[in-house]
Length: 266
Image (tube, rainbow, N blue to C red; front, side, top):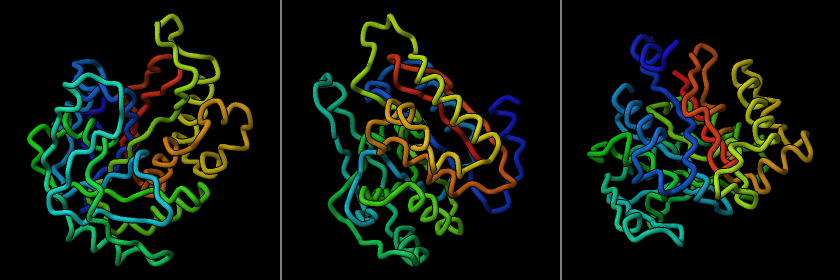
């Protein structure tokens, strides 16, 4: 079923969609390509949320934090890109009221308020295309880098009652050390294998296999030498409801070893 048919015909009973979005190269934020076009289309089709919670691969902390700023700054947390990318601003307001509700909802750990962090490129590079008017409040929750995958999956479950709309931003396959910059290799075999493993277990609603992905050994290590770009997927899976429909988009590999696969649970 096409993405627009799934979203437009889904029955929403106070429950908003959850997305995992592969953001890939930061230049996707300002490049008119298939990825940015998909983000734009999805933004037009989704029900309009009251606020967006983003869990990005680019905010790693010891402990768990949530942004409280009324006017979060646009973070250009990268280097070596054209000045046009550094000039991008995404002036969405923050959502401190929803952030406080998040703090109250989580019982398993203490969530600390953060007024310094803004919106990193794992958030704004996608949102700039989905909601170009920046008219929806956005806040972020950090990823506690000291915790194992199961911790993140279970933490997401505590947020289910706040399911306004979640945006988890990372990449299902993310190995910057083995990129095919010249484009001669469209996709490495191991990248395709890991991507297929993730897709199958999402379809089968088998989160345990995805939580325990490191049991794949070398394949898992090749796909994720470090797991910060994988962990956001576990938040999306933790917020998944058994009644949700599942729709994939941007099912492509970029630069050989970056999976752009993205999914909507609605």
